[in-house]
Each structure stands twice: as structure tokens, then as C-alpha cells.
Image 1 (cartoon, one colour):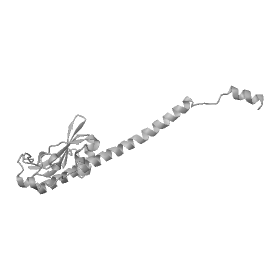
Image 2 (cartoon, one colour; image 1 turned 120 degrees about the horizontal axis):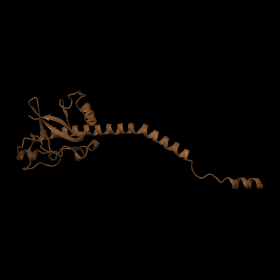
Image 3 (cartoon, one colour; image 1 turned 90 degrees about the vertical axis):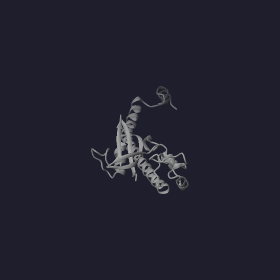
Image 4 (cartoon, helix red, strand yellow; image 1 turned 180 degrees about the horizontal axis):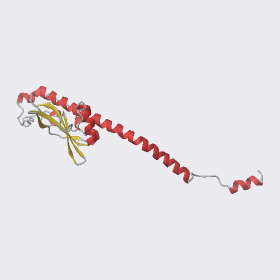
Length: 192
């Protein structure tokens, strides 16, 4: 080695690390990618929530129909679709179940997974209610909290897209707002 190369390597130490400009450029690229990808990811998550809510509502509706087919009375709570009914249980009209109805219970009519938190962290009310529309009573399933966007998506999926200014008060899907979220009510089946 010559003395010249020794001087040069001693004067300029090898570089260890990144410059501030390199770090800032990297952060800017990551921020731009996040700004582009996060809305698309959020949209996919919302679609998944809507699908789960719609699926759970139709599963509950099928469970209620199967319960009615066996018992000939409508359930009052979601528990009656999962656990056997007994003499202390009452139907949605507050009538007691007869011994023959108790013996006819062939459940569970739905999976417990349906009753767990559904899409978008919403939860089903354990009590079914009655909603009267055009002098017909409907067994109604309620779920909350539901955002207006979730309501619009579920309403479009289950109520055949009857989106209009009156969609929250007509059709099978109803929506009542309380603050920033609300309660979605699904008119599952007419009570005869």
C-alpha cells in the first residue's frame, strides 16, 4: 500500500447509517402508500361487516321459522332458539308453552355464533319485539349499534335495495337513529 492510500482511508471514515434526506424520503413513500391503501382496506372490512350482519339476520329468521314450525308458537327470546324451553318460558304474546310444545322442541335452531357479536361490533337484542305495519304484527329482530352506512348496506342487501328517503320506515329493514349510531330492526316474519 502506498502512503497516499493510507492517508486517504484515514481521512474519510466509512459511512455508517442513513442521511436525514434518505429517512424523510422513505417516510414520505410509506405515508403515500398508507394513504392509498387504507381506504381500500377499510372498504373491504365494511363489506365483511355487512355480509356478517345480513347472514346473521337471515340465520335468525330461519331459526325463528323452524321454531314456529315445531312449536306452533313464536319465541320471545333468542335463548329459546338455543336452549330447550320449559314451563316457565313464554312466547312473544306472553302465552305459556304447553307440555306438548315443550316436548316438540327440536333445537338448537341456530348456532351460538350467530348470537355473538356480529359484524361491526354490533349485538342482537335478546328479546324479540312486535312491530305493527298495516295492521299486521311482525316478529322483529333488533341489532345495535349500527351506523347509517351499515344500515344502508344491509338494507340494500336484504330489502332488495329499496333505498329512498323513507327506507328507514318502510320495508323489512327499519332504522332508528340515536346520536351517531342507531338500531336496525328486521321484520323477520308476520305473527299470525
